[in-house]
Every structure is written in structure tokens, then in C-alpha cells.
Image (tube, rainbow, N blue to C red; front, side):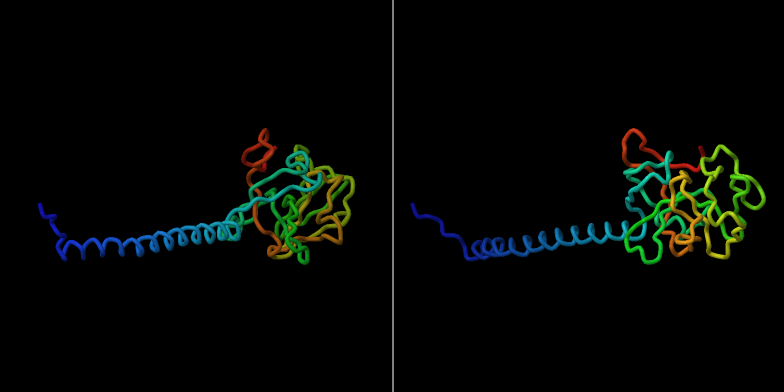
Length: 200
């Protein structure tokens, strides 16, 4: 019995199918590259403009925050909203490179801040003693009234006995441009994980 020969038409179809595998492979490689590239760009964008992790260094914010705490920083908070009194913020002082300082906003533009008889006074009213920074033993610049100009903020560490902050001349008032975002969530340690609030 004679074997049937493949028609020329069938041969052409088979040859075309084999050659079509190369464009499909190239397409998969290109798609994979685009997905990876998009993920990198998205990750960079989120870190640069939205949210990133920051770390607490030192005891200046105890007991709200502790040395070594890992937290989330909302970098969009003050691009679309206002800085509020008692917000916990990340500050990058001019000339400090990539180092973030974590402090609490005490005074807002237009406020008058001072310490009278060891008590923190804002706009003529003593701050409630429920706040750990209400009693200050080392007033520094707050021995006299500090009047904040537009775009200036007065910041303290909660642990005022062990904090370098706006009370001292080498730190001074914080400029709006130096505020890099709002610290809003503790990631680590796990037992204290959760959203940060201004209340005590």
C-alpha cells in the first residue's frame, strides 16, 4: 500500500505553526519585563510619594513610641491636608540627609508657646497634665514666649527630659518644608501593632 504524501498545503501550515512559536515566546518575555518594570515603578512611587517605613531611634517619644519601633509614614498627609496639633510627624532637618526625626507637633503657625512654672502653656492656657509633655523641667527657649510665624511649627518629644527638640537653639522651630509626613501606624513590635492616635 502506498503511503499518502502530505500535501504541499499541509506542509506549509505546519511550517508556519513552528515559526509562530518564536513571536509568542518573545511576547511573553516582553510582557514579563513590563510587569516587573511596572511593579518597580509603582513601588518607587509609593515609597517616594505615599507611604514608607520609618524607625524610632532613641527614647525621646517614650512611652508612645519606643526605641526600635518600626512605623508607617503617610507622606501624602500634608500635601492634601493640614498639620494638626499633637500629630506625630517625621522631620528631615535641613542638612540632615536621609535621617528622619520623629517628634510631636505642639505649636502651629500663629501660636504663642512658653513654659510657666514648669507647665507648658499654649496661647495663654496650660496644657492638660494628662499629656506627658505638659510638665517640662528644662524649658530652654520656652523660658520666654515663642511666637510662631507662617509655616513654622514647634515640636517636642513626649519624653521632654530626654529629647532634643524645638526648645533648643540648635534645633529650633520646624519649617513646613522639613515635615515629611505623618506617622500613623506601628508595624513592629507585634504586641503594640496598630494605629497611632493623638489621645492618651
